[in-house]
Length: 384
Image (cartoon, rainbow, N blue to C red; front, side):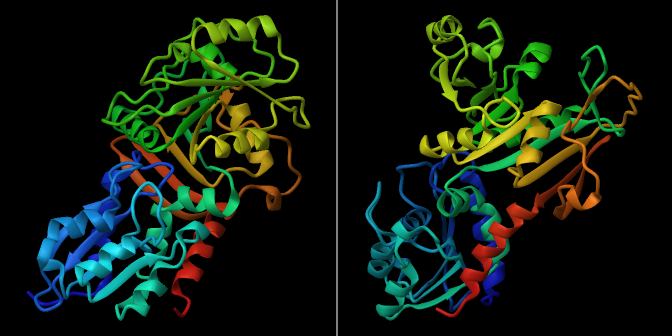
């Protein structure tokens, strides 16, 4: 077996990193591969399993043992060189006798220092920017936390071909098929939090948990400016695996707050925005301060409209079911403010289309989301 390209091994590292999706926050998912340059053989693979556990590079080097000496190491993110929950990965790489290190993107977190420069000073050959865009996307939650001091925000909608998420009576089960719903649960499993408005809670009485796939439950975030909901809905049933935060305005009734607190629901009062609703930017600041690095917004239409209006979405997942509802009073997937020109519309880039039996997913990044990815890529392909 001959040595293959850097891109070949990096894509394997990306696949390995995906095993850690949803379990590493607030750290990013990272994958690493140790390769024998003489034969091209993959000696060991490793990934960051959970926050506080060894990083991907250390996992791979431990598996490789003495065979790591003289090998190449591929990592989706630049190895760290600081003491955090675990010792520096650069120390382990130097000690293992690795000859060459290739990473997907540089770590823009100032705490992480400059791992590649340290490795280079110890005589290790280094390269950055291999499969950079794919690695930046993998690391997008971390990049948003570090560079923008806010979570990465994803919009998820299941809608009919004419853009409705429910009939005028509120019937919405089911617009898409089971494979599409299973994919939606995969999104929940990788997100730190899931967010809906009070109307979705009142109409659907959802659990907002991960059930159709394996994975942790996201923190459930509920928007209810005036605390108009009652605590009897499923989403307010909390335990060690299910946590709920309800966001209300500063003037919401104190007596209602007490009812939620008695059920174990956290109540957070936030300033009011321009429309008299909870200020979404203040909500994102709260999430950042509480180590929530990603939010999956599932609606309803007014909530999506508010996030669109504020320009807070980074990524969009629109799943279309094989239905034309045709109900003029049906609920819209996005209910935002009127606009006078298509130039004001939210543009979606990097479009991908995937079919889930009878349902079709359209997925892409907003301009703000893509800008963050490009910044990481440009920084990573620069001369070391």
